[in-house]
Length: 184
Image (cartoon, rainbow, N blue to C red; front, side, top):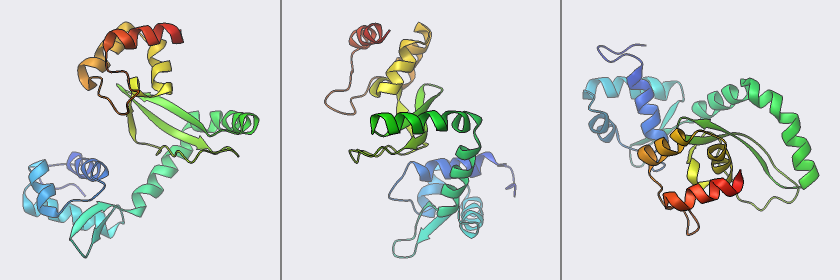
């Protein structure tokens, strides 16, 4: 369904907004955040709820992503040719190392894990598939940056900054460049 004057982009905006809000949001919060007319956001939320893409908690009236969205994500991820091609290698590496193995891809200035094979000695650290990660703050992201152009490194710093996600996160551009040289 296309909503008057808004098109499909607003539906995607609602889904992206809810995906970024683990605690959910009320319909009023959604329409204010996206500057949508109340009637438009209400119609979209009702349609998405009917399809299971969003769910509403009756206790607080907050909407969150629903189970159908997870099912769609798994179908898309499973159909990616990279995932299909890489899967046997991930399984072999997990068996050889007994560690969890992740497949990550660059998505603009971020990293997204698209597949995972659990090793027999899993440490219980679970990375959510499909959630964006900062390139500078993950081993996979730093590997991608090390073999990318200097322009990408500059773009990451400009768009994302170098926020500290843990005590060990590199937050200084000089230190990041030195780390990328070591990786190379």
